[in-house]
Image 1 (spheres, rainbow, N blue to C red):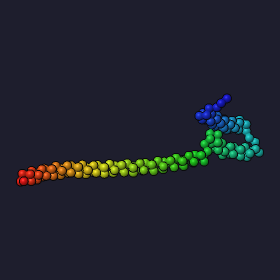
Image 2 (image 1 turned 90 degrees about the horizontal axis):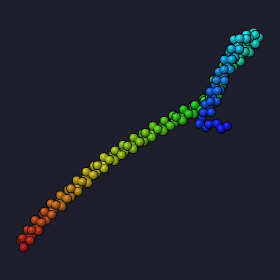
Image 3 (image 1 turned 180 degrees about the vertical axis):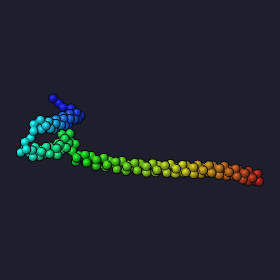
Length: 142
């Protein structure tokens, strides 16, 4: 039988394991309520119950697969990625500012070039008129 690889089998194992631990503890409590413990064995039973109670967190986390080191590693990775995202956003904002400045300088240069072209055309037109008048004076005086 091939188990699914998308994490369903792992989740089922976690739930079944947690349910088993819960039922084990409930059965121990029920047995201790039904059958009294002798005074001579009371310390041993209390020590066993204390040990089970102390280790229940570790057992459940082992069954469910959530280890504190893994959680801390994932938190550190998330923080690192968040810092990287902040750096990328700052770099993007910087690049956007540079593009806006470049567009402004292009528009200024375009206005300057257009002014120069218009001025050159006007000067050439004026020079043609002056040259034609000068030519007509010179041709008329000769």
